[in-house]
Length: 595
Image (cartoon, rainbow, N blue to C red; front, side, top):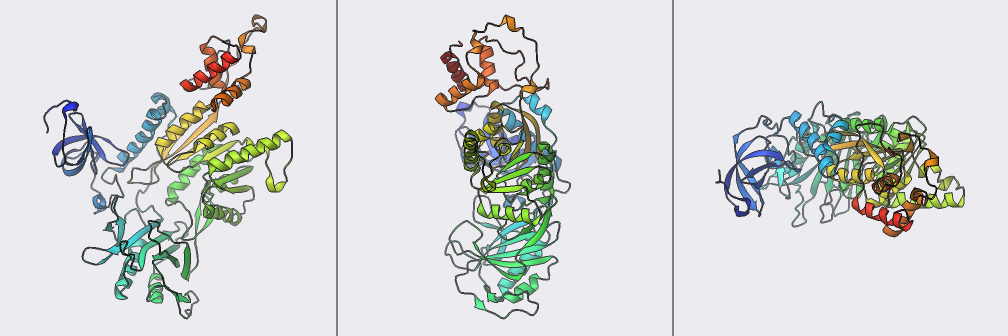
């Protein structure tokens, strides 16, 4: 162990060997420990471990180190089931007992909401439900994409890229994937060897087979294989097979023999090729040819039937997806009459699930193929009360709202092709399921203007979730429920579903006010809340809520109802007004000669 030093004097260098106790875990699953105040990030170390680690990259106040030896294992540590867990790096927490992993993820979400969102810790603890864990945290992925390459001896291999590299770690049976993957990969590699088919080489651009995509419908048992090929020739013409399942075009040597062999895998339904000749990190090409069986496989999720193509967007963990979306639907509190917006809707799984219990649902998604899938899924499931928009949520929603407000103002009724009803402008529920970067600011602003009764936020990154929750709560919403869900066991990733509800006048506690005691010329009568809000927006460009205004008026001794906007629950925490909004509201009060 290094001798005691002041942090200012610490100057550790690459190659230094240090003994350290792991006290925390980082966002990427690395263990965190300190030596004399100097922080070390150590991959594969577990909280409670005492380890020997070698510094690989040193900075002034921290370093990245390699785990050399576990000196004293933590009671959280278990032996990874996968023999190459450390080399692969895909499962960052496989050395941690699953119940400890769930506790880590629960704490990760809680800490981010408290620290990054600025919420009271006791309050968050009070509204946070236990994480939804997996009954079986193995074999849960219904999709896998395996790069094909060669090892140092020239042998053909399939596997996964090592972290931050394009070096393939050979994997013949990933334990979070389906059991059929192993048989399929072995069949393809054996065929490539027999027919002298070369894998793609990123450096030269030569070689044929780039990746193998495998998908399985967990409810149907149907399996799809798609070979991604660097195919530059013209497909040769071949006679169709007797069973009618073959293709007239040959894209890979011995294609029919390969299809015949793959067809013996239980559940095999579709075999196709995707042509990708670009020098790119993008796996799939846009040109798809079915060479055996059907173009798609089927599956059922959340009570809905789906047809899945090689390019379809579909949740990779259907078992947990049903639990996650089920929680979101429960939070939405639908009774059959509500209007719902689903932003970042993907193929419409949440949208269509809620359509069965709502009056009207609208879905927004930026990816055209996903929107086409969503529309087809609506037709396939006989759902007629769902409408979809293709575009960025931060563009579609504001444009829709602005157009609708103009229609409202002009008192014009649109026809059915451009229906903009009041319920669509002011929905009962808005659901958001954004990418890791969270919601765009314009999207959040429009949501606040639309003022839904409830907002259900489904998040894949609790850091950006915390940021967005602060904006929504400052905008007049109350944080009601938080629940994490483990969608990706043995990794650091965790999903979270949150319920927010609007603080409305009926949330107030009424007290009697003797109007005779109020001076009709006093400050509080000189401008309405709406006038103050509009003045601030015009001069400062941001939105303030009635709660913000009430807090500032109370600060300056202007008579207000004692419990204005106080939540019904005594344990609920009332958000403070940000300093920039305080200053803006004070300027508005001065303008209206109220202070």
